[in-house]
Image (tube, rainbow, N blue to C red; front, side):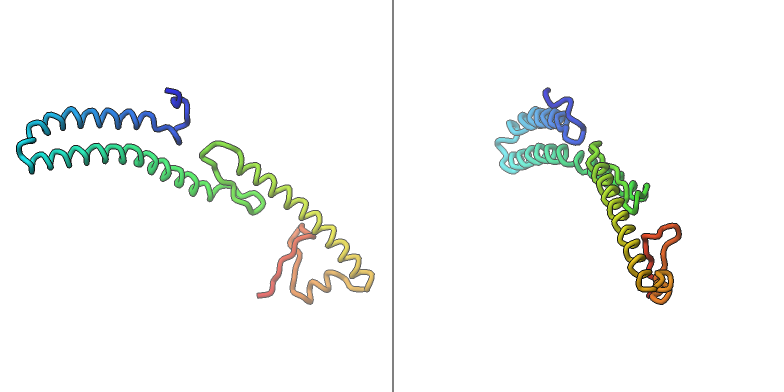
Length: 162
């Protein structure tokens, strides 16, 4: 009763109720059969094994099948979202739990990449100034090394060497 508000991911109370009903049903049907078969050892063993099998399988199947189905649906959602949006080279993944942990991680990574980008820009400018003070143009240096700047991105390099 207290677990009625727990999300489906962890809720097993309805399956436990079905398991209890199944055990009761196996007992109602198997009990009289055991009384009838008590004089015949082979029939008694067959009824006992059958009743134990039905009880165990009902417990195992009703506990694990819903979990396996949920896991399969979760994987399908997670892998289908990987073809989704791409923020700064980082895939945005759906989180089936509904919390925003991954979103916070992505925001942190984006902020870190912005800081790294500005630091790289600063270093590029210092390099450009140091080369200019020695009479070397950065564009000439980049041509001789076959490294080109990406369009509209003075701080990003693309290596054309194979």
